Image (cartoon, rainbow, N blue to C red; front, top):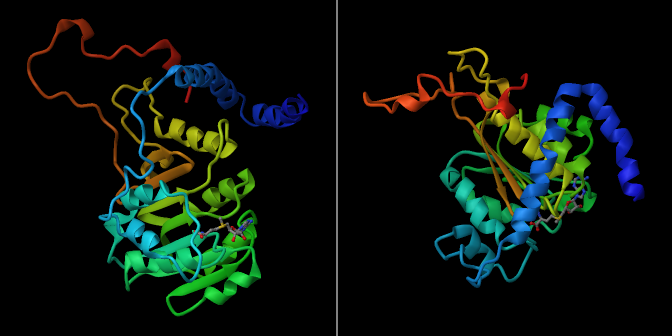
Length: 284
Ligand SMILES: C[S@@+](CC[C@H](N)C(=O)[O-])C[C@H]1O[C@@H](n2cnc3c(N)ncnc32)[C@H](O)[C@@H]1O
């Protein structure tokens, strides 16, 4: 019970900061509860195979499978499908890859092997011991990812990041601050991936769901206005997987988001305009 009361000051602060956003967010709470009940009601008679999405055609998975000795790599196995899905197009390209959370150094070598000789890997960890993994292809920065001034220094020392993998601390302050500081810094067309978003009602997942809401922003009250928000011009898509959130950035920002009719034959019942559902009749 105490934990619910502890949330009250945080909620009051959010209300004071932006009452309209707060009320609109609270409106979504009943839908979250419905989603929970729906998910609980489901059953699946098809029995699973833990590696069904993974094959030898995924070079990262093969690398991991064959990596029995040397510097340690510690990953959830289903992440390998997610990585390859979002990272494959960068193989062989001149990319800057940043992994937060080095631990025993093996994953830094894995990224370099996967992306190829033209790639440079940046590693960040809070532990000084990780500095030993530095070489001409791998740069190491020691610092706390929840410290905004650390990121300012980091950004001053690099010329852009194409792929960010956050495998560092699992706290909200680690993951949210890293996203806030680094998403704008990732180059157009780049990918941000955060691991270990664990548990129902995870607050970082809620933060990312808030970004999904921004991605869906639309202004029904200015007919013909198909302009995109700043966020829509930056974020191409947001993907959720078990324990992973991925944001892909636009290579080129869209000028507009438009629904276009092609054809000459139409049913009469919708007329020329889509009727705005009442729940969407809220201010931006
Ligand atoms: C799960 S391990 C990383 C595993 C590694 N990427 C791998 O694949 O084998 C998490 C790492 O995050 C680091 N870490 C924890 N809190 C951090 C923070 N606040 N800032 C930077 N690194 C942090 C830890 O020191 C640890 O090395």
